[in-house]
Amino acid sequence: MRKNHFHSSGNSKRANALKHGYKSGLELTVSEQIKQTEYELRYETETLNYIVPERKAKYTPDFVFTKRNGAFMYIETKGRWTTADRTKMKHVLQSNPGIDIRMVFQNPNQKLSKTSPTTYESYAHKLGIVHVAKKEIPAEWMVECIKQGEEVVDVKRFFK
Image (tube, rainbow, N blue to C red; front, top):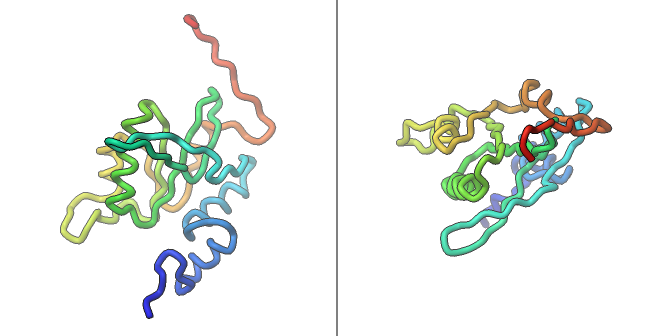
């Protein structure tokens, strides 16, 4: 009898992540990193609409931060970045111009396939995702965001 890959208990990191409400060990690791900071942990709290040609769909980023200017920073973690995941991300970016989505990969140097020279990181850059990290959120990203209890900075604009 084959194991159900999504709910397999064979991977202890994954089983531990599932026990804590996350879908992967990487999501659990990143959430633990956030908990050790003064930033609010917001896991899968936002849902973004996007359009797949001929149908509407929804995407829920893994983590959400509010930046000092009031905009959102979305963090997506990926151990495996499947073709379906890459296609979805392409549609999300096309449907939400200017969105700040950043990727945390288990291994950004992983190739898309055995025969492809393209890495996860280079493909993310090709999609327009300029911020890519390995295994945890960089401190430079965090300082762009407000901490729990802080207020959004009201940026003065010349034109309203």
